[in-house]
Amino acid sequence: MKEEIRLEKERKIKGIISIILSAASFAGMAFFVKLSGDLPTMQKAMFRNCVAALIAFVMMRQQGLHYSVPKELRIPLLLRCCFGTLGILCNFWSITYLKLGDASILQKMAPFFAIVMSIFILGEKPNKMAIVSVLLALLGAAFVVKPGQGIVGLPALVALFGGFSAGTAYTFVRKVGLGGVKGPVVVFSFSMFSVLVLLPFFLLQYKPMTAQQTIFLILAGCSAAVGQIFVTKAYAYAPAKEISVFDYSQVLFAAVLGFVVFGEIPDVYSFVGYALIFGTALWKWKQTGSENASPLERRVADMRAGKNIHEHELLEEEE
Image 1 (cartoon, helix red, strand yellow):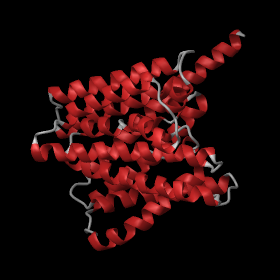
Image 2 (cartoon, helix red, strand yellow):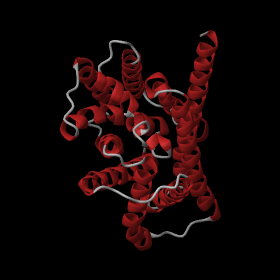
Image 3 (cartoon, helix red, strand yellow):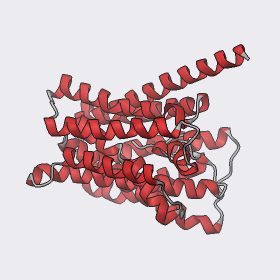
Image 4 (cartoon, helix red, strand yellow):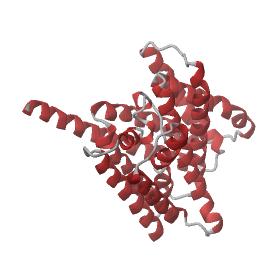
């Protein structure tokens, strides 16, 4: 028994370390995207999704999977691809104009939006705790967005919509996952869909890149891939309900990078928003890990960034 407890603790520690390394990698992805400068958003996203598609294809081959999606799940999978693509575009565009910490925390609204969208897509009814957590998180987002500040608030609104799109995508990931579609197939579908949709815009809006910009975008794609690998390891070591809250360390890494490299200092309203969103996530995590947590809350924790519902087996983010 003692040996089992020791091994369980070791797995949890490894899971926490892996999820923190994943968060650092995704913060690095955002950092390199910002460093790439004023390139078209489609061009930036193309690099990220090409890398994801390649890795997804390799994983499908390694697992001996064939591309197969039941007819009744093709529309949900298509919607997952659409919302996932929107989420990435909004995230990449907003990174250009927002402080890295602000962009990251608004992206982390996705699990709260997933609670809302699960009502309409999956027919799940949230309990009071879930409703309160969504309201508190939205209040925190309002402090970061700072409505009423004109053009200053527009990138934040776009980032928030990106969080909504990602949360909706996570919900569709769960829907197709429950139908038996494997994670690598879902990720490959999303990645290839994004590449095909972005390709015409990429060709029309292509802007010649310097060697430095090319390196930054390659590093962004590699950072995303490394982040996905650590996500896979993290959720193999420990369940989402035990380690998902540590994924919010991405905000800390992003804020530090923004301060050190770009001299970004979030204002007091952003700090209040960070505290509300992170505090709500921490409270939800503790409640979900308790014996009294509802089945929905456990599933929402497992849906953290869509990573536990099959997609954690390979890639994606959210990032």
